[in-house]
Image (cartoon, rainbow, N blue to C red; front, side):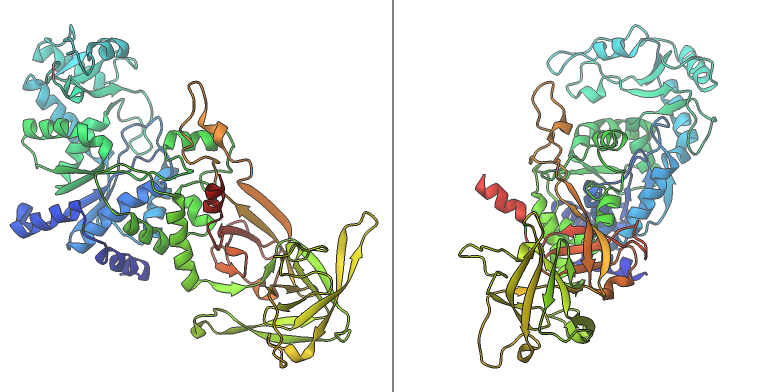
Length: 567
């Protein structure tokens, strides 16, 4: 077992008990299905996975690990017009990144032949028929929640006619939309999913795996339960929107007399400031409102991975929010806090200046420099130390200086003394400006007796500033990401409105003038650090040795909660 998979297993074993795990534990204890546990994660490959899928991944794979069972990865590839191999590959990458490995890699398309044979069997039993009406007509026949449906005029076709038409549909004799195959159940059923649902439609569209072999494709509700049955899934775990479909899955299984896979539903994940609809995420990508599926502002696993999230943080988040049958919305701060908690223990500390202001230490010897010891992690000595060069010229954050500071501003100002991290006390003596009155440089003096940050005479300062050396610092691009949407519920729009109207225009700020301490000169995409006083940052996938690029994964504190509390 890999280190990541081992960590995932450890996470799974520490998960709190929820109602689904109670069901599984009872079934194992009672010897249901021989005490065997088989789950599956069944995404449709029509987009990239998002953080909501992570909850299902952790649940399905976690339960299999906890109970000594197996979990399949099954692609629900029944709609070739929207599915691509790119999405299949990205899904496999995401599951592995989260720390899980599947028992079998399966596809609904693996079962197309079996599903077709079972459909013919239902036709022979008089339980399915070919309907030649339009989709609008079929929709109208379904009735309403308060009114029963009306039978299709094609409902009483003979078995022989239905078999002939269905086989000719398969042979490609008819155009798209000419016919569908429907189950014959009950047009007056209170559950509208039982009102003669469509099982097959004609689609002359090549499939990413089967090519042109098929021109009829099973509907999700026909393929889903039977795929579970073929794989002998003992616990088919779905989100709550599929609860109303469960009687239909059970009906199909009962009529066919096949393995009785059983479905259990849980509440899906909803996050503030986030949309999770694949359709809407695709709209953002295609409309170039973001820079692709892996844009660090996207809730896709590819996006948050690129931003700097760790699989450990995601698994801990899923464990924290738990599994219930009650729908709700989780505040995005819960997810961000999971990352802060994780990176606080694992991320080495570095110094970076995002908006540089030059400081000249006038009493430091010209042409000389020294190397100061800096702890890689203040709370864990095992991380070791690094050397940071210190000399006459430094950069500090422009926000750490004010020429006329207010009462509660304790950082640098004229005549003020502050501590430089790992270095000395410095005092600002002179402010240099350009012809427009902009501050361009500070002239300061340092106290050589305060090396390491403490004064022998016991005097105190109220601020410690981070800094980088001018000569040895590295130029970098730093991208500051914020919430993609500016409102808690982006989908809540007035009639005729568009969820994209709620996009946050300040969700990305690019700083091309940042300066980094020289130890950040050799980094790899995905490396993560805490930039002291600034937040947690990750090396972007586009970063190069010549042009380092860092993404802010998360701030040190939840700044949005402060904004909300003032609102």
